[in-house]
Amino acid sequence: MITSLPPRPERPPKVVVIGDLILDRYTWGNVSRISPEAPIPILQADEEEVRLGGAASVASLLAGLNASVSLNGIAGNDPERQILAALVRELQIDTSAILSVDDRPTTCKHRFIGRACGRHAHQILRVDNESTVPISSGTEAALLREFRNAANDADAVLVSDYGKGVWTGTLLHSVIEECRLAGIPVLVDPARDRDFSIYNGATLLKPNRHEASAFLKSLDDEPFKVEELAERLFKHQFADQVVVTLDRDGLAYSDGSETCHLPCEQRDVYDITGAGDTVLAMLGYAAAANWPLRQAATLANVAAGLQVQRLGITQVSWEEIEDRCHPVKSHITTSKVCTLDEAVAFVNRCRHEGKSIVFTNGCFDLFHVGHLHTLQGAASLGDILIVGVNSDDSVSRLKGPTRPIIPADQRAEILASIEGVDRVVIFDEDTPHRALNALRPDILVKGGSTQEIVGMEVVQAYGGIVRSCDLLESISTTNILDSTRNHQDRGEQWQPENTG
Image 1 (cartoon, rainbow, N blue to C red):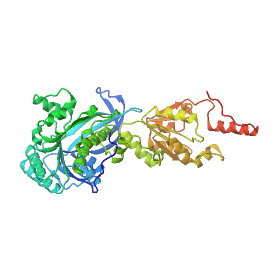
Image 2 (cartoon, one colour):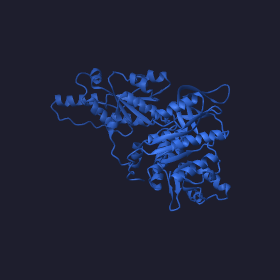
Image 3 (spheres, rainbow, N blue to C red):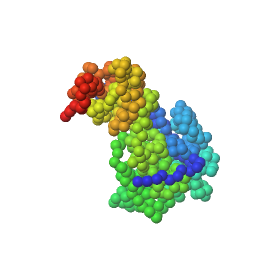
């Protein structure tokens, strides 16, 4: 584990990403029954989303690491190209080296994601629209010209090859040769089933376990252990360095002077789609910053571990990487207390990572064991727990002019310190209806019977689940205050009741 991160460059490193540009479409919805027409699930679509894939995804991940990024590739003259270009420009990525052509579509992968209440979302279908026909010699020449313009003063070049017929052996040879002459490191994520010799001369080759195993097997050089993949592949001298991603086993690297296997931490895995792109992006940033391979590989392993806990490919920030590298970092509870809008944004990110959302609410005045019991029960029902807490004015209207005893900001801070609570939202209304409509949790939890739960009609209307948890007998803020007053009225010293 890294105990201190290497210093980042004073200026953002300039990285050129070349490869196959892909637009990822997502259709989200609920799955509650099987079609009577065929044994397939019926997806009730309720959300559409577009994301960057392929080389565009790698560029996006680099932008998330604050690199200066240029993207070089081909897109069709179609609506998908316009969407892809707009997404790229939003991230301040240079699109001037993207070549538009009429003879092939923009590669698009459409994924359909089904979710059931209280369960993780899962991909149920993918539809691809693409061409894998090799580009013409004229298009090759035009693409190489765009690359040369983009690579001027570059600190690193990344190749994200998906084997779509764009980056031919001739093109790759020219790119790698020119970069070596200019002293620019070239890092390659190879296409499945391509001969690694077409990447000869690269600075770093980054296949996954299956690609490396298949290639070595074709040479009658199949290793017996996964840890040997990087070392065996390095001996074939295709690149100065080799990094092999090993999915659940982390990654391994070799550079002639050192061979090392870096296992990954145990974690929940929701989607492995972006792990390879994340590793390439981090290795590319590290090469541009001139960091040693050991540090680069370790950080790439950490970043990939964060990525696989999400559904779809999203940016991994330095803050997240630092938090993972420093697990003993002090926990700042104030970051959990947020506005409703901030909570909605947080919930949307979590939902797209396949996580289920639980909501509970209350006044939480004079926090006691009954409150703790409710929160622990709620947290056990899903992945993310959002707690709504009534404001001071709201508590006064509900409980009387002498309440609350503890101000809302302090009540929220206490709640935020509880393990299992992910966000705390203070609301002014007497009911949580507005928060429920905005957050749309999968599960609403409250103490008492389900017939008494305020907001249950809101959650049930969109297919959510309402759960009740048993209240601890005689434990409430009102009872505690009444007991205190009774003792004071009798002139007795108050003693806490034995609740067992």
